[in-house]
Amino acid sequence: MEDMLGMMIYAVCGTLTAAGLWFAYRSLRRRRYATGLRTASVALLPMGLAMTGVVRFVVNMTVNPIAWMGFGAVGLSVALFFTARMLDARGVEDGGSGPTPEQVAAPDASTPALPAKQRSAPAPSAPAGGTGKEDFSDIEAILKKHGI
Image 1 (cartoon, rainbow, N blue to C red):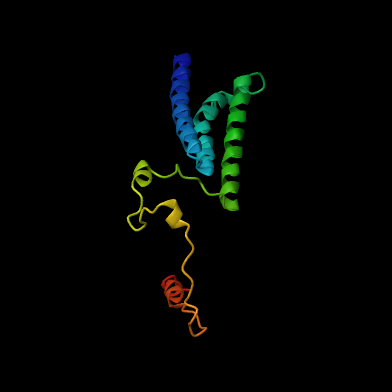
Image 2 (image 1 turned 90 degrees about the horizontal axis):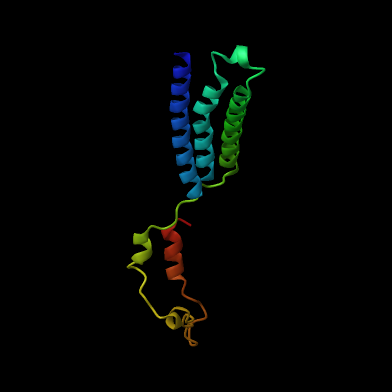
């Protein structure tokens, strides 16, 4: 009976750990490093605690290598969690997964599609017969719009 209970604990905790590590893998693939490491650290806890055998720990601690592997999993979990916290403190941004296909397929309506030759053409210069004072009203309007 006790063996059956132990196998059920390992099955449930193993499933929880595997699911959590899958979510961590997906976060890491999306370049969300702090989130992925934090998820992995939490995901390792169920299996680590099951491996330590909280009830049988005192009796089996010195001779049971699975208990020590459980401590290793818990230690790794704590190390990953604090690594993620350090990444957050340093200001390392979680990278997004990039632009969506809709954003790539549909360019902005505000930018006209011009040939490359016309896009790189220099701006027309001010008339030579001017007063010597250049017109910066459009630049001032842009700066005022942005509160500068």
